[in-house]
Length: 405
Image 1 (tube, rainbow, N blue to C red):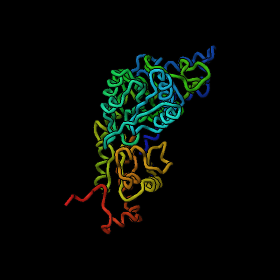
Image 2 (tube, helix red, strand yellow):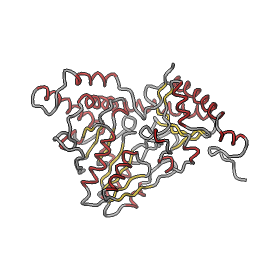
Image 3 (cartoon, one colour):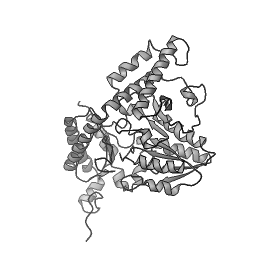
Image 4 (cartoon, rainbow, N blue to C red):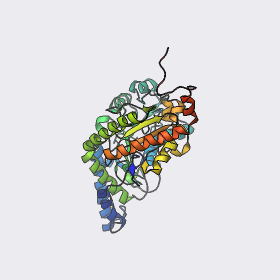
């Protein structure tokens, strides 16, 4: 069976160069960086090299501004909870957008149960965040702003530099969730004016089991895992050296190949969306159109008169991998909060799928996927009561509404 992978937002394959760099740290280079003998020294050297690679990738001022965690979720939790607790003396008010990833949203909900207050800022119909709306809800007790670079559902790219300027003027810490963006968008933490930023290497051809948190030297952070003094005392626990080494190599390769990756996936994105529009009627693109306002890897599409999970399962049986929702919440069978926040009709939200591209996808793969997609939609609509009602003229289309009389 032919295999076409269009779920790169969930994870990406580890590059051969990354795996090759990792393998010695499972065997001969097994030392603990905390050890004082030669085995530990070799591990410490590798740890420093990975830190330097990640710092260059993000344009951090110093390798010491890089903290390694167990994954993107832990990096987010450390940033949100750690910064909120460290800034509690200033105030207990937090601000976030209404479409943050569950790792951010649930961390804030935890803090609310601990006595913090939070304001959630609405977005427009394409998922854009207006920096002025953040500024409007600031108070003297606001200590932390949480926002993403590229939305995990919609692919919408946010104006982080403008938000950074607003935060800097108010003296408020800015945390950016760049897990969905790193490796596919240029990130310069100094130019953006961010204080904290989280990324996850397995989203850009690195390994799972490691996350990266950039912490500016000006940002205060309270540790969330207590034990030894690893990661400059901010994240206790013996470092996952194979994964950290892989993360450094993946970051170095991503920095080198970023322009090429963006150009390639942007071309494929435009081709895929145009073909789907041609072959599949009654569909809607959620978020901005392909272009600078949208990350080049993502297409979030609502297919009317079917359920997205059914479409995903049929395509999976044909070797085509797509997502019927955000990977972290796909099993919940609930409408994604992001889709509700942009005002998407429930009937369209339940038919939403995400196709996410990678650098290794080909035009031939996309042509195959589009043909299978169209065939699967036709099959599902043939079994759909709502499609039958639409055909009989009893309900109207949400994607192609009738013009007013």
